[in-house]
Image (cartoon, rainbow, N blue to C red):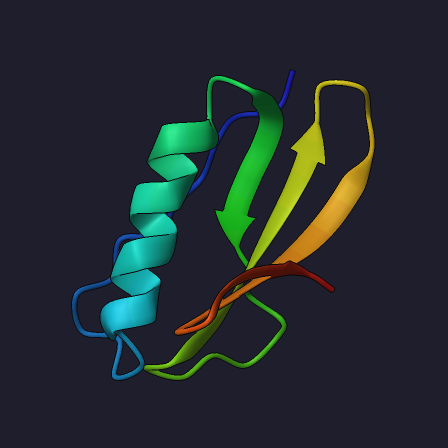
Length: 73
């Protein structure tokens, strides 16, 4: 089983409101998924982040989080 990962880098210039929201969302869903982390390949801004996750059934998703909410992309 994979572990849940959140990179903890306070010096990251892209650390904004959506990143904090995404980290909180990952903490809330970690019991229900096999793996969840902030995407390290897709660019993020203060207003937009991507969360990569894998369900316990093995399905992989990229979830966009922005001011409008969540969207599976």
